[in-house]
Amino acid sequence: MLRTVAALMPLSLVAASDPPPANPGPGEIIAAAPKKDWARIPAEDLLVMELAPDVKGKPRRVVIQLMPAPFSTGWVDNIRKLATAHWWDDTAIVRVQDNYVVQWGDPDAEDEVRAKPLPANIAKVPESGYVVGLDAFGEAVADRASEPNPWAGPDAYASTLDFFRGWPLAGNGESVWPVHCYGMVGVGRNLSPDTGSGAELYTVIGHAPRHLDRNIALVGRVVEGIEHLSSLPRGTGALGFYETPEERTVIRSVRLATELAEAERPKLEYLESTSESFVAYARARANRKDAFFNIPVGGADICNIPVPIRKITQ
Amino acid sequence: MLRTVAALMPLSLVAASDPPPANPGPGEIIAAAPKKDWARIPAEDLLVMELAPDVKGKPRRVVIQLMPAPFSTGWVDNIRKLATAHWWDDTAIVRVQDNYVVQWGDPDAEDEVRAKPLPANIAKVPESGYVVGLDAFGEAVADRASEPNPWAGPDAYASTLDFFRGWPLAGNGESVWPVHCYGMVGVGRNLSPDTGSGAELYTVIGHAPRHLDRNIALVGRVVEGIEHLSSLPRGTGALGFYETPEERTVIRSVRLATELAEAERPKLEYLESTSESFVAYARARANRKDAFFNIPVGGADICNIPVPIRKITQ
Image 1 (cartoon, rainbow over the protein chains, first blue to last red):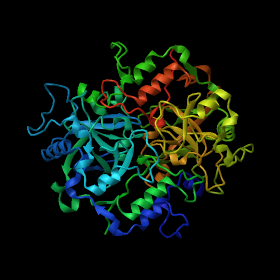
Image 2 (cartoon, each protein chain N blue to C red; image 1 turned 180 degrees about the vertical axis):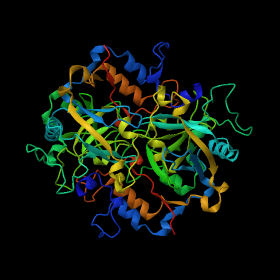
Image 3 (tube, rainbow over the protein chains, first blue to last red; image 1 turned 135 degrees about the horizontal axis):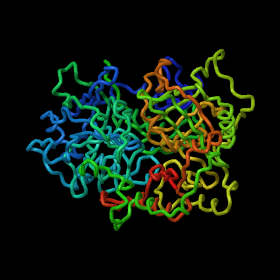
Image 4 (cartoon, one colour; image 1 turned 90 degrees about the vertical axis):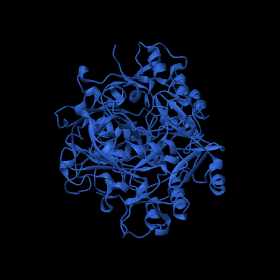
């Protein structure tokens, strides 16, 4: 199906047997990246969410990578406690709003009588946790994060853009913060100064809502199985909430991967942001010269430079 | 459900009965826009795609607005001919790639024997049609399009950003081109210099793939029913193509709205880009000061300023 396949063909899917192209695309650069450029995601940082099976009885597993310190540590700590308490078991996907978010948690959260109580050790986190001062980083990172990246074009939401341990970061020269790209996981909240506990979570399933940066805590990203969330029927209520309990998808369990048997744990690695392979990949995303493209732009929206993440096969 | 609703609450959904807020959000500005600021989308510019009903027997109608001249006119003319010839009847959705595109057309397009022949009057369109010189516009538009907008922040893909008759435009001071935002419809093609006929179409269901701007023809946008495409099961083949015919969604028919009985025609209007209401709306998108937000950014990605489109009710 050459014509239809070639349409919009991301070269990441070119067969390895093809001869290397003159201008390698992002996909070839990833495929050629040496093992040393990949970093394993620790099991301690992975949440495994098992949804009820689909209509055909197929299991639906969604894997979330929690954000590393120094970002959103207060909320991430709460989320580890909620997972350890098995708090999300038998909660549900309650909202699917097209081109925006999928949200899950306790469907009765607002019912004072029926709401599921939170564990006693859940902390209130201040809004100051939305950003991190550059002084919290080592010199190297602080220096990098304090200037725009060569591969990234200008940005409407920040004066600096960078990647830190595989995560996109925006900044203003004084502080940095995580970015609302597709698949990022954030914390539902009430109006300021409430910042949310971490019990109500959402993931982005549309165009990056960057106006939420620094306004909501980002705590992780979906690294496997996002299609089980993004392809759910859209809710027909206000904001995409489901109008009846029957429409919701039940969450069977959410576990830290460390609580699973070794064989059950997701094994994933990401392309280290500081590696030569990543820099080459990001430059290629910003300057598409592979066969399908006529006009290399010379810049890229940071959310169009998704950090490569893959299963560990060997 | 205050907490969960408030989470990420787009104020477009605040009830009209609520008192007007001190800092109106985009939603209130749209709701308050006078009728004169809205422009009807002509039936001549609407394509109505009827998918096979869903598993519950519910009809699935997708409405596409074709791009106005002077943009992509060669491909849009082809698409009008294909629709008039009822060419898409009994074709199918063949590809759903998460965070990228939904693509439809003839599943046998690449099979020389079984491929559905195109009408004789389909034109080959040159790559020069991807952009339009500013000289093609009236002074007013050319002047506007030649400078960045006050509400839009800098952009990684273009030096100018504007809206023209309700469509987002990017430019470089010499020419302008339509932008790959969520819901935009483009023309699948083979490698350059092929530009596609318009028979194979896709719509964006993820983060704006702006690197495709000027590399592929954009011919319209989905203005109603995109959820029938964006929530389809993702394809498990390369590029999100379905691996078996059974997975495809059949397209029952595609018609120009003018071919439908008056009562069957979609009646839609958009907020005119040159209206005061639109400027206020776009500024509000770039400077969120409504109750949910702590930090107004002062700029917005053009794909985060979706042009308001609604059903005509009176």
